[in-house]
Length: 479
Image (cartoon, rainbow, N blue to C red; front, side, top):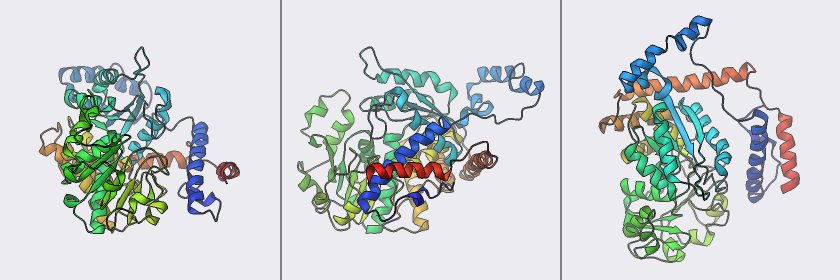
């Protein structure tokens, strides 16, 4: 089956609304059945030659004793003598999985396997999905349990990717581990989203001819993602005073004492003090003359209203990034006046997807064995992502690369690695060109391995009939 164009099986002559609804239903149904068929997405395969007993004597006992004692005497040798330097732990308690909320520790495993799949295919990273049951005796998720868990597994990994952890636990976990863990800890829902949003926004503003420093920016949603977005945009030059954030109760402003009085609401409280200088309260006033909307809130399609977009400035930029359904569909946003629209989905133009950042950023820190990830490294990644797209030619329909632009990854990884080296937090300070070569080779190896498994028949393909049956069942139910 040709996986490049599954939509060729779709019914013809659907209007925009029907097509959007059909796509969502089809991809969910197809994903469920495909996962059932393959029983997951990952397997572990050896990376060394295997022969008779002699090979086991080398890779296991007695030979491996020399590896253990060498690392015992110098723990940093674990980066050179084991796979640790290219291994990421994807850690989740599954309390906020995509747009589906708390899916239990078991429910997030499919997403974490998917994350590992992307790391392998896009950056040649060995990633291990680890869903953690961190519920206490009352059934509430414990941040401290995740913190302890990550600290305990750190000797086996080169970096940690935190995923789908609800706020406010995600803030505490990231802040504590960022200070106390000896390897980089990346919260992809926050830092990854912020990095890609910044990259997309840099290019969108080039297209519309505006300067980030003078833009009025509305951020719809004040959770882990948009709080990180706000902070990174400010670090990249945006005006905090001209930002207005919304949560479920309204705008953030200096009189939102509910955040001041929350022990773990400190990130939002800081934004209450720094943003919305004019104390704007209403949607109408907030959107009036706004240059940019970045929505990372509840799935739509009616979360953001067309009339709000109609109030925005000339050539407004709208990022509606909720998954699986954006806060407003692109065709509705454009009808309301949006000049550039981005979403979190790959079946619309301008996908704001963390996959454009986390493989490159994590690969960059892995190849130099960095000890942490800083804002400056994320900003370096955002500029590299934006620069890659700009060289290909920007337009309202193309402001950011896609997941298939694998030649972007070595470039972005080299910029992240260089930032780590310049900040003095790299255990293995190699040059940009060395990073690019190493990363490109790893990606080529991963792609070649996958292709050989498929071409040899060791990984079975799905038939056209399999897809057609799902299309027919979805069409009968939704159309």
